Length: 294
Image 1 (cartoon, rainbow, N blue to C red):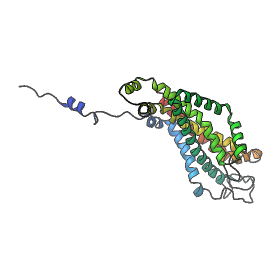
Image 2: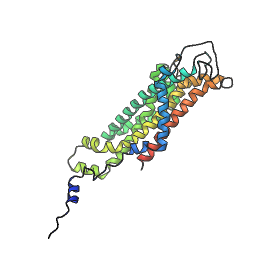
Image 3: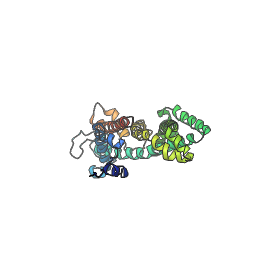
């Protein structure tokens, strides 16, 4: 009596998309599930949530003045105390977070988009590549402080100069990173196979090269957000950023400098907030970088 052959292996080969095959875990999801990234997400999430809830949490307006000048932390109605003009520090820190997040949320994507466009232009033709590289060199030739002072001298202090300075500073970072990725991926065998298969140059770039060259850009976004926090804080600290009396973390910290010995609580709020935000973004960037480089 002949036995019936087992058809299970054949069926498994015919239907590979079912439970017989599991898709690999996405690298970004794996990176964000690490303890390092979770700590960063908690820190950044806490700061962002505090800024979003500023109108609810803050008991005073950021520019409202009272008769309590340099009141200590824990004063009734003023958990973080007041500044030299009697303004509630908790309100100024919370609204300063909103201002900072609004600026970097606009500036970093603009810088990233322009940098990527320059990189794509460089990939299109050798002449454009040379021109783009010289543009990057020109931007990098200006130190961040000189660039900030130059833009502010032309446009005056305010939100727009801060956004422009951050965006300009991030263009070479994203542009060079994507350009390098495109140059590396161009030499891979799968690109050659796609060209031999009849795919056009733009199709190969969009369908094959860019998806593989874009991974480091995700890491760069986290790094650029950290840099943007420093740039905005430095410009506000030097008085060439957002115009007073609108608060930012950098401006509140700058105003506290003459009173550090007399009222150290004045600087505590913005300093702790900036530290938490930068540390959280750095932890996220490091976790993403480790996973992408595996």
